[in-house]
Image (cartoon, rainbow, N blue to C red; front, side, top):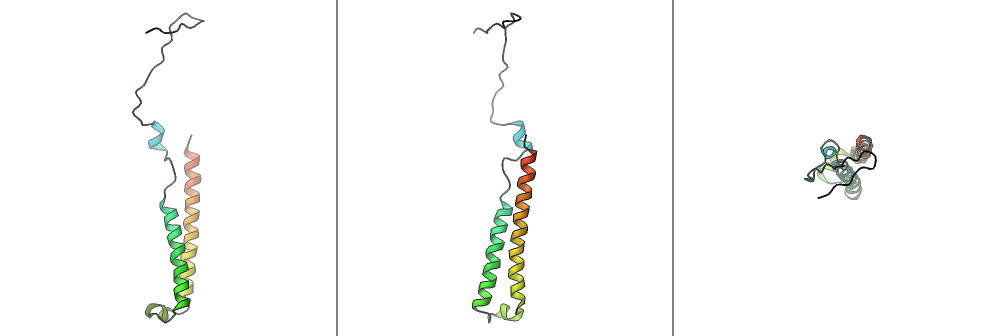
Length: 102
C-alpha cells in the first residue's frame, strides 16, 4: 500500500479512516423531521368539528345534541379553531427544528 507524498514537505499523507456504523453524531441531537402528531391532531380536530356541525344541522333532535341546543355550533367551531392551533404548533416546531440543524 503506497501513500502519496506531499509536494511541500515530502511527508506521507495518511487519511484517517473511521468505521461507518451508520450513525451520525448530529442525528441524535437534531431530529431528521418534524413530529407527526400536530398534523394528525389538526386534521382530526377539523374533521370532528365539521362533522359535529353537520350532524347538528342534519338531525338536531339527537339526544345529546338536542340538550345542547345552539351550543353545538360553539363546540364545532371550537374544534375547528383547535385545528388551527395545532397547525400553528406544527409550524413553530418545524421552524424551531430547522434552526437547530447545522
